Length: 70
Image (cartoon, rainbow, N blue to C red; front, side, top):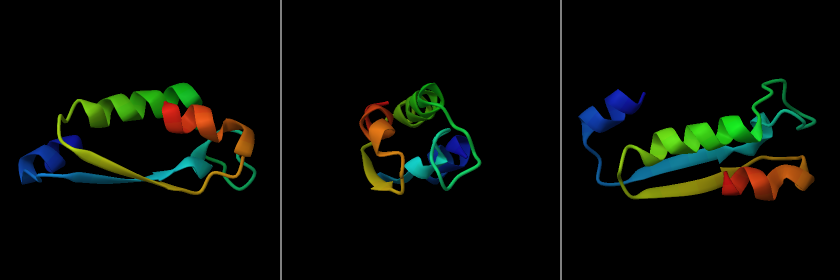
C-alpha cells in the first residue's frame, strides 16, 4: 500500500486509526499488539509526508493512550 501511496504523490496523508484492532479490545479478533501499532506507525512515518491521524474505535480504554502514542 505504501508504494501505491508514494506513487500517487499526495501532498497529505489521512490515516483512519482503528484502535479496536488491539489484542485485548472486546469487539475485535485481530489481536494487534502495541508494538504492532508502533511498527505500523513507523511505516507511515517513513513515507515522509504530512499526516493527519483520525482515531476511531478502541474499546479497551486502559490501552488507548499507549496505542495512540505508539
